[in-house]
Length: 88
Image 1 (cartoon, rainbow, N blue to C red):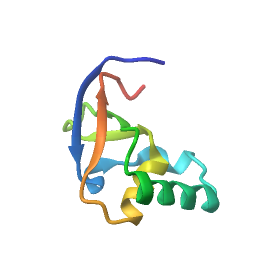
Image 2 (cartoon, helix red, strand yellow; image 1 turned 180 degrees about the vertical axis):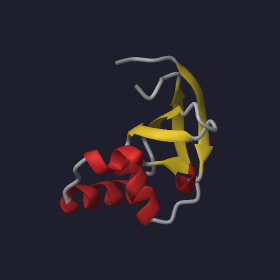
Image 3 (cartoon, rainbow, N blue to C red; image 1 turned 60 degrees about the horizontal axis):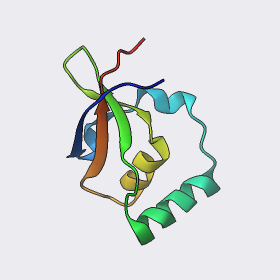
């Protein structure tokens, strides 16, 4: 699945919708590795999101481990790429 990137922006992790987190598994050891990587190297790859039709909120579809690492490290901003997608 590919879609046009409409913007690359920085937002607070708390501003991102996480409805797909419930269907994504993440082993604690893998999450710890991501947090360690963030601590050492910073964010190398943006989180992938789409803008919902109801209110235009941003919803994560890829990068949930990166989002969780940013939350755990209390980051104030996270780089995201906004894609032109529909929820379906």
